[in-house]
Length: 422
Ligand SMILES: [Zn+2]
Image 1: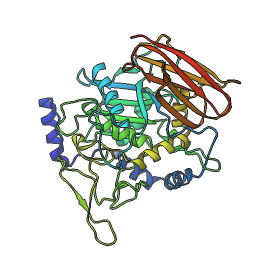
Image 2: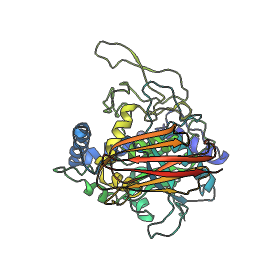
Image 3: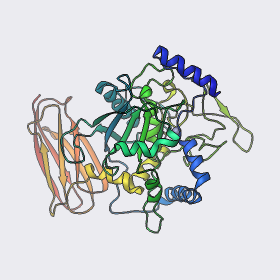
Image 4: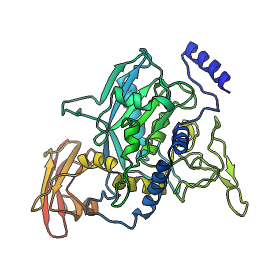
């Protein structure tokens, strides 16, 4: 196997075209996790603790809770570590990858990330390239570093994070570089669940020099010429790990990924096609179809379009359980408190989009209702147990005219006039 891969890689380097053999492991989580578990029993304990934390999470409540209904935004910094100009991929290719993440994590209509699956879910997570660097200066959210090295995922993680990394409490770090062997990428699990009485796993992050993010080979980042991995789903898969999702077989035969609506499977899909695959994991010997369209399988990019509702629940739990993930989310999604209900529409007059900033004291049940001049309801949103927030509205389809926004908490109501003028 190794020899044939080397020959294949030589061929690819020569032709400048990537089409990996079907033995390609889609990501390095199993290799790295297995190695680590062998080396570190404590780590294993933390992993199982993390799993049980997730299971009991639904019983807990916190005034800091990020509600599942809220669309959260995560800033990304892409660190390009390039060995040659080919690996120094363009801004356009990076932007294409961000678009793909948003299609897949929002199950966006009319995109490759949409599905009609009865258990298909919307993560309600959006990504954008960071607009401020760690010093507060304007940035494109992209760093570029020339480096004369091809990295090995298994051994070089800590070296990569020492070259460059931004605060993992504020950004999702994605390193894009040349990787050796046939690995496509790697995503770090969020092990810092930080619940009271739960042992912190900071030691693990320290051991890998705070490598907390996602690593992807440049040949599979964004839309690329790769036959099987050209649609940018390596990033979708690895960001899934970064948000706490396991492979759909949990890296063992018929393993439990803690999501009831992903069928148990004997093996991940290593084929180069989207033909149905079946497993016999049920006790009664019944054969069931594998969900090869799940982003957390190993299928080629063009087969994938599904996160399930239980995967959504698991990730949304992680946003509250993991301190680092939660810190990233709340920096943009939690505004300061106000003693009395305060709302601001901007801009006003409005053209194609506007935002409504709503400040209040503590946690509240909140509703926002948009009326046209005749008093008909155009849009209605309601949230429970919410802190001060800002909401984005798309007004591109609304007719010009005067509208009213009623903003209501359990104690107070305010009405704002909005002028839409395209
Ligand atoms: Zn994986």
